[in-house]
Amino acid sequence: MPELPEVETLRRALLPLVVNKTCTGLSFYREDIRFPIPQDTLQAHFSQQVVHEIQRLGKYLLLKVPHGAMLLHLGMSGRVTLNNSMAIQEKHTHAIFQFGAKTCLHFVDPRRFGCILWVPQNGEHPLLDKMGPDPFSPEANAQALKIRARKCKSPIKTFIMDARRITGIGNIYACESLFQAGINPQRQAGRITLAEWDRLLSCVRSTLENS
Figure 1 (cartoon, rainbow, N blue to C red):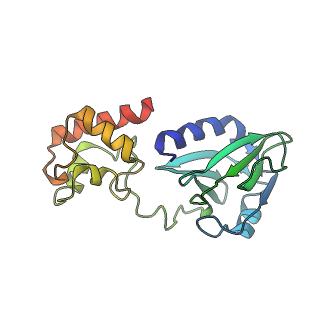
Figure 2 (tube, rainbow, N blue to C red):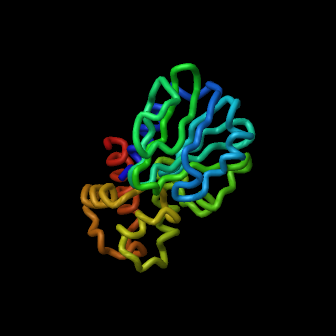
């Protein structure tokens, strides 16, 4: 299942292929995946536009153009493959995005838990509006997370896997980070000290970056 490190790896791989390039073609082969694909909106606002940035928010990728962004989420089995043709190469290819004569990105998702959506220029979207800070952002600091957890009786592992508290930490990375930090996953989040939060965040970042 793609987690934050896999999504960040994809973002970095897409940068030279997509940034400052014009989307010259969009093809869709399903009306929906996890959610309905807003095909008309994407054709109107993403096609023939220059992508100026690819931003990662937790496990979401935002391919930004002047009037908004195309949101991609890989779900449980999604991936993006690079091909030199708009012709379908694999079963379960649900969309193809073209950025030049031989740069065609195929969105493949056998289990269909991923999504392709549109985010308006103001950045507001139901999937993004209640997200916590990214682990690598300045907002994800020990003091802020200690305050967020001060009345929480849930286990610390459950807390850091909750995208409303902090984004992008899946089961494997939560276990590894807590082990490295020497913190019992079952301890109440509200009982984690400031020093432990500082240590845990450092372990979260190193675990995700190494992965």
